[in-house]
Length: 348
Image: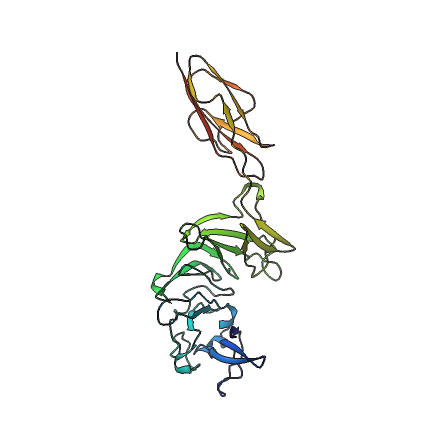
């Protein structure tokens, strides 16, 4: 059984083959007689430069996507502090097993790599790892916006790297994606902004959970700062935390607590009586709701009632002319109800 590992900043052995010191290296490890052994490895050709400038590869995690179409079905994707995206064949990590060809200048173009490699700085430095969904890679580097990179015939198409406008500070984020398989319009990308982590960081301050449409990352569906009165506020941020999705809920690790997010229970829809109809005299209207503690807002001018728009219902009222009555019920810590509507035509 093989496994993929990577090693952080440090010395690389340029004398022995295979190398015995493997700083800034992605390694494939196997087991022989129950002991770990080095099976294959890839090291950027500018490893020494990355080490000297503290832009090492090992700050980022390795992503292993599902099998791809094309010549190289078994790829891995990784990026580190430099913000260069590496795509490596897991079956043979370098061309002709050359492993490493050190070069004196700082460049990200590796003559021994089998596949693709972006330019340096294509994404913000990664102290995290990308996510995969339905043929797309998602990166959220430090000091950068969320970016999506499509795979075409098994390889990233760097010409189609796109981003949204939401920039996140250090350390960036590792996204998680929930969806109903590959069904359109069901994929949500979740990410935690932990940039307000505590000492020695800028915090303590709250973590912020974001939800984006994974098929259109420019569309933010929700975040935990939007609700009034800090209803959805998370606990103080923990650096490098990753959202976990299970059973329709999202779990966020915070300082001394775990915050759990899910769909709020919905306030029941109000009942307006009498029902719509034509009347020959004035009509007394009554509005009721079965959710304890709810407040009913209503309108009679065909506008939609909201938490901040419409009259608050207290007692029955009388209509002397034709009107449409619309009502919504609002309960603290619950989702607002659907809008109820009844139309009354009053004949002279």
